[in-house]
Image (cartoon, rainbow, N blue to C red; front, side, top):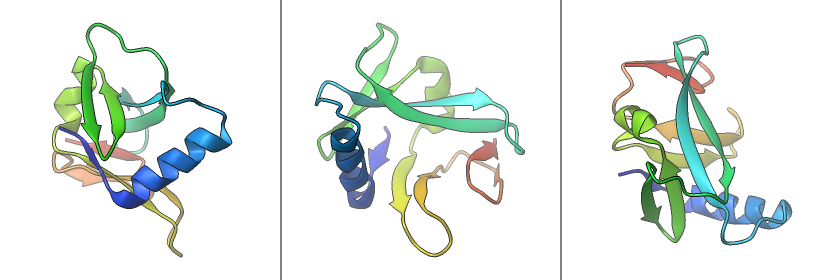
Length: 108
């Protein structure tokens, strides 16, 4: 399962409205090779649910994850920070053994 915090939910809802996306646009989270730690998170809106996708819903937000990425993301919480140390979405991933300073890449 992948969950979202209240702050992340609010930011997703605001972004969806700002970008003119309807409620049929869900959040797609995936993992790709790259970054300074080896793996990178990828986050975006998607209006298509693929047959192999795993679909999670938390706080009214549907999250789509492909099977390969799910192995790295089980138990992850998506948060949003707008504090002094940076602004943006953050992944709290219990599977990551190491993360980079910016939090956009990790290794297991």
